[in-house]
Structures are given as structure tokens and as C-alpha cells.
Image 1 (cartoon, each protein chain N blue to C red):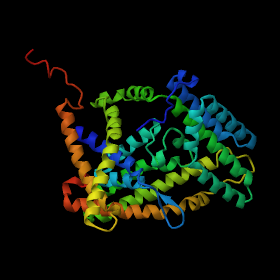
Image 2: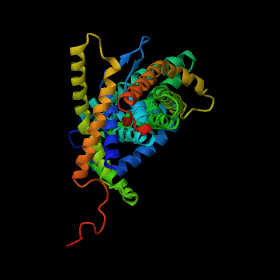
Image 3: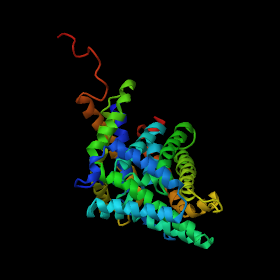
Length: 210
Length: 190
């Protein structure tokens, strides 16, 4: 599974991740307050210009992320038009484009390792609870590794179903899929424990007898 | 400890994987995706805390920019868009589903999971989803502009509810199957 971050470096990559998240938060508050057509229109133009300055890949990625929003914006526009408030619908559509587009730019220009470093830093207080700060990173890795495994498992179950029945399985594979998933979780927990586990190393445990 | 981590990780993976199942169009043109079914299942099977943590993990993956939502969506944009409330609502949805299955021990599993999924995955999730949409819609109104009513916001989101009711039924049936064939696997009642 690939991150949505751009595969090449841009000027925005030079800004530290924390600064980008901070600027984004400020911009969101501002965009929520702007109610004029001109203001939101200008915001959309600024976001479009920023996107364009990041190259063709950024434009393509942004369009992919914004596409699912077209429906809800269209429904709202119709609704507001029916209520005789066409302009409100347009302002809403522009605000959604500006906000989502801007947030996407942060995602596009912050490589995964930088974000993981940020998460590990944020996870440090976990140690006080006796939980290894490695837990968040391991959890993320588990999910990324197991999504394709689950899909393959589902395909095998579906094939076995087709061998037995002419009907479609629909939701009937969910229970066996869940069983296999619970087994996997047990096996992987054993494997993790065999490799030292996720508890914090206790002082003195390995020093006995040395 | 290790087992909780792997259970939470694998159910998060299930929620992500269900996003790859093509959206099923309901009769009146509204597509339903199966990811919220995964959310309800995580709560019903894992219980409140582990179910909620599995959802939190998926939300974290969205936030760090992985395309884990249905249709390959992800990134911070989702959290500021008009549907952000629904994604955030997944968290209490899984928690409440699990809590009901844990607490209603005398009620048959299918019914308990169904009640939990209705309360968490429909009532609470839609409340947060509609509220989030309503906030984005009515942000920055000028004096004199008429705000959209909460009622109207509910009406706009209502076409998705039948699809989620189907997911409630499926959650109950899957929970019952698990309880029947391997009672120890239904950790919410373990």
C-alpha cells in the first residue's frame, strides 16, 4: 500500500511537519469564518495555485481526493437553490474545496517517515503506562502487512464456496474470515512474544548471574 | 498485551480490507460501502475498548495519509470535509456496539449485537456525522443568511440509513455464528 505522499520533493517538503500542521490548523479556522463568496473564491484560487506550484503529480492526486466530494456538493447546491439561497450553496462548495484541498497538500508534501517520527514522539508518554513506544509503529505495520493477506484469504474462501454452491456467498464468508483472523492474531501474538514481546524491558531481569 | 495489539491490528486491517469490496448501489442510487460493517463487527467481537482502538488505528492511518478508506481515500482532507463527523463517529460506534454486547449478557448475542450496532453504528454515528456536516455547512454565515436546520441536514443524510440497517443485521448474524461455533472467540463476552 502506497502512501498518498508525492514521490518527489518540492519546496513544501522543506517546511517541518509540525509547522505545516500548525499552519493548516490556522487556515482551517480562517476558512470556517469566511462567509463571503469573494473570500472563499479567493481561498480556492490560492489553494489551486499552491497545488499547481507542487507540480503535475500534486494536481492529479488532489483531483482524485476531491472527486468523491462532487456528489455531496452537488446535492447541497441543489438543496440551497431549491430554498432560494443559491449563493450559500456556492460558498459551501468553495469552502469544502479549499479546506479539503489545503489539508491534502499537507498530506502530499509530508513523507511517511516524518509522520512516523512525529507519532513516535507523541507516543513517548506511553512508556509511563508500561507500554512500549514501539506499539503504534508495530500496529501500523501489522495493518499494512495484513490487508493483502486478508484479501487473499477472502479470495480462497470465495473459491471454496464456489466449488460447493451455485449461489453467491454474499455475507456468508465474513464469519470464517473472522475465525481465520482471530487465529492469525493468536499466532502473531506468540511470534511477537517469542521475539521479546512488547512489554518494557524490566530493569535487572537480564542482569541476574552476570 | 501482545495479543491485544495483534487483535486490534488485524481488525483494523479487516476494516480497511472491507473498503476494497466494491460499493453496493442501493435501489435508489445511494452506494453503501462495507467499512462501517467492519466497525460494528470490531465492536461486537472485540468488545468496547479493543474495538474502539481498532477504529482509532484506522483513523490514524487516514490521518497520516494512507489510502485506507473506501475508494482509496485518505489524508487529512477527510478530517475537514463535510463527512468528517461520520469518520470520527466510527470510534463511539465501535465502543458502544462492544459495550452493549458486554453488558447485555442475558440477551442472545445476535440481538445484543444488533441493538449495540443500531445504537452505536446508526444513532450515535449519524448524530456526529450530521452534526459535523451541519457545522461545515453553516460555518461563516453572514448576518441575514438563513442557516440550514439540523432537520434538513438529517434529511439529506437519511438515504444512507437503510444500508446501515442491513449492516446491523449482518453484524448480529455474524456475531451469532461466531458465538455458536467458537464461543471463546467472541471476546466481548469472554
